[in-house]
Structure formats: C-alpha cells, structure tokens
Length: 237
Image 1 (tube, rainbow, N blue to C red):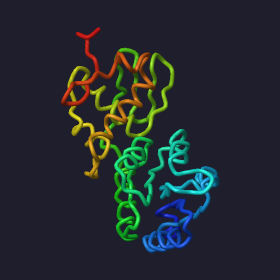
Image 2 (image 1 turned 180 degrees about the vertical axis):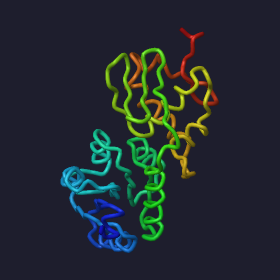
Image 3 (image 1 turned 120 degrees about the horizontal axis):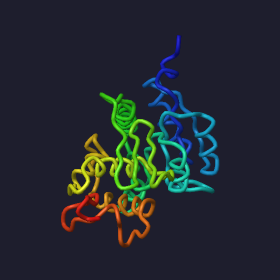
Image 4 (image 1 turned 180 degrees about the horizontal axis):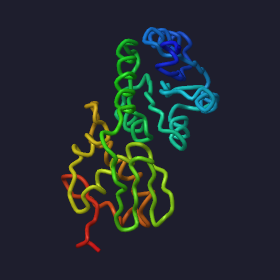
C-alpha cells in the first residue's frame, strides 16, 4: 500500500534559505507530500528531472541561477505547476513570473499554511480530468490538439507555455470573435487568482513571436483596441 506521501507525490522546493525550505517542507509533509529540497539554482533543473515532482516551489533569488531562468528552462520540457517565491512585490516581477509560465506567485514573508493551500488548489485544477474528449482545433495553418497539448504551424511544432496554449486555444474556438482581456484571464487562471490584465498583453506578445512571420504585423492574432484580441477570420484573408 502506498504511503500518503507517495499518493500525493513529490514537491520540489528550490529555496536558498534553509530555514524557509525546511518550514515549507514540514507543512507540505503534514498534508502527505514528499519533498525534495534544493538550495542552489544550478541544481534545480537536474533535481526536477530526477525527482519527477508533481509541483515546484521556486524562489526567485538563488545563487548561481535565478528563478526566472529555472522557470524558463522547466517550461521548455514540462508543464509541472510552478509557484514562485520572492521578497519583492513589484508588479513587473509578478508579470514576468506569470509570463514565463509560473502558475502562482507569493511574496515573502508568507503564511506556510496559505502556501500549502495554494499548492493543493493548483494541483486540483491541473489534475482535474477533462469532462469529454476535445476536438483538434485548426485554422489557416495553425493546429492545436488539446489532449496531446501540441501546437503546430504549417506542420511545424510550436512550443508554448501553459498560458500561451490556453490563450491560443480560446481564440481558435471562435475565429473572428473578439475576446476581452478579462475573458482571456479567466481561461488562463480559472481559479480566480488576482492577476492584472497586462499579463495577457505579455502572453500575447510572446505568442505572436512564436506563430507570426512578423509579430509587428500579425497575420493571426489581431488587437481589438480598448478590448482585447481576436483571431483573424475569413473576411480578413
């Protein structure tokens, strides 16, 4: 029989302050999670590969490699949920973390109990089974497979972050329809996290860089001034 920790999975804690890391590990342990602690940024990516975590708690300020770069590298090959920790509360830091694919952002000092509840809430959403099979979406050379989590343009694979994927998926469901920034926020953060709508602009900018020939003159994702974005429709061709 599996132990509670095995049932819940492993959380990778990347935090150079050993007391903070131990405190987070203790609270996660009470909820049945196994934990692996890493205190050096350079070791984090390898630890994620070896430990196969179900969740990553990632500090921003780390020796040798910062949390932004670790998050970027993890997102190149994994959709593991990431919660970032930082001692700074600037809006730019929050936007940067979410734009790189982090799922949540907590400012120090924080309540360990609240952090654990955030971890559990994000895991519930990410592990929730799809209610029914979802068809592959395609438009004008773009294809998106929701079940396989794959995107291609003219047959060539495109690597997207989780948020970029969700935005493109929403737009592909209704080419030509204008989606407000608030609607797109709800697609990206269905749990009701408090996120500024500027994050959507950052995600769309990065998405355009990956799917457009010329991001400054987009063929696919068009800006609806004062409202949001839409995917070009037949009348735009």
